[in-house]
Length: 344
Image (cartoon, rainbow, N blue to C red; front, side, top):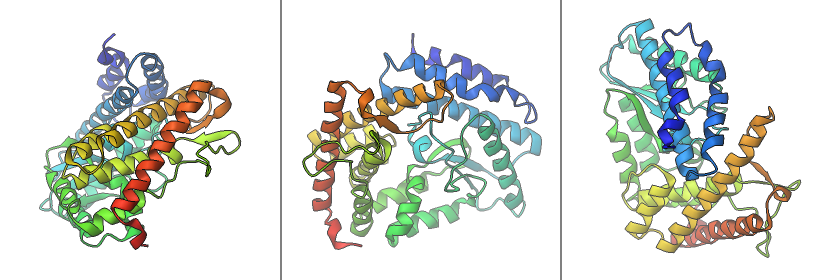
């Protein structure tokens, strides 16, 4: 069955939403997504599965925005709803929370400061009703509704004066993608690509990319805590950071992790073998995350990122060790290439 046919049911729910005060169909949204992921996992490319989850969440977000516009009246100026983090990359899993911002035209007028936060609140509340958790760090459009010029200045600040603490907090913004609205926001991508050509910005990004070390012992064995490995913190997070670094260093605004790594390989910022190994690692670790999340949600438990080693076959444990070693090796090469030891 083609992938889009698996998405028919959640998309029908989206089409059936008619008013902001009639969102009861969203109470079963997470169950619908669970069913989609469960059906797709055995046969589909796992990275296509994460894109499918992002696709239906895009559709839901756009529908909520249109309903909010109908309820509150036309916006006072052009705007763009921005997906950030894993949603911005189109790589959502069952544990993904909300990451968003809203950019509006600098000439929108004084009413924009009241209208757009109200619009954002309606959408964030609707997404929360659908089971998408609020971002613990507060990276949501309810807090981040800003004129485009202000967001551009913020991005330019990271490029011009890349303070490590600010960059670590801002990583979620570096995966920005417009989901809805008429306001062109290409300037944000262009600002980041310019940053990729600047040494200090790249060094600080490289420093962040090598900070999430894979859970390996000095002898290269997988180090478990309580019999489990957090495959996000110890694996996929590092790959996402490495991919973003190497793509921007190559002058690319690619969004997905695999496309970024390929852009880095094409641009010579990472070896082709290193990029291929990281793509394989990302695919494998994401598959493990989704598998344990499906099992947890089916049991009525929260979706997490801990994989119990005893639940893996011998071949899977060996592959886990190998992919974590690949991540560590690329981190080592990246630290050397960008001289991360020279910054604090």
